[in-house]
Length: 374
Image (cartoon, rainbow, N blue to C red; front, side):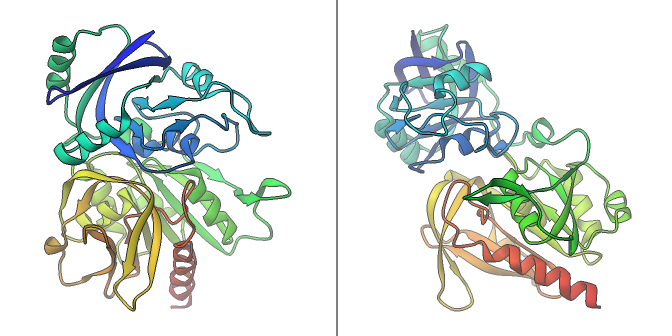
């Protein structure tokens, strides 16, 4: 079966359909990771996006039931150069094609992904239509132009949990897989679910935390009533500006409990501190983004997935930039001068990606420990 991907600026690509059939719209973006496609598929931060993988062969190690970052895929569509239909890995349970069919995700292979990525890099990420039912170029481009932009949408409500829950699973052990926390909990953490990845929760548990996950719109007073030692602000999809309820809750929590934010959580904390965000031309998505700490000369290679960034010029005097992206000098981290609050734009939990920034979970533990001593 044929499939077509049309961009709002008129560019159209044709290929072979795999996964589900139908038609969807979304922002067309690219990810430069060589592995980790299963974690990318299940990362809620990709809600509303048609993801293009730059690595040419995807699906070669299949799909398993363990390497997932949420209960299901959240992206709108999946674009690859070649989709492997004969995976080879001892942990593989099904093919990529079968997995996408199971979760009604449309995929397309066989297109020139290098040309597509170069086009996005030059022209910017934009709305597109992925279809197996309509292959007419003019029709698809018209639909892409009429489809809503990701800017201004509240996509968090589409991925957040509906009820709070406790998380007990720790990080992966080579001998035993995922195991519960070892020993008693030292800290109680409430994690806001703006589209949270499971490996963030696993890292918190591994550091000795008892973790309760709450929905994105949980009022600050309800969070404080749980008497946490710290509050975590998670990653999530799309534009942070319309998530006003989260911004207000963060303002009410500032100074009352230590805060640690990642990705969307970093952007929301920045807005709560008086800053602004803006849309990047094509975003940062992949496992090889170099980030420098502003104190000293340490450089980390980081995993990233975001299309918006914090405007450094908008930050107030009480917010200090702690990390800078070496590719484009965008803000990658900040902390408050006097209050126990800090955040980073990238993903220290990786999955997929390097583990250079795992120390940030220790910094959160130290922040909570110092707060408890006061």
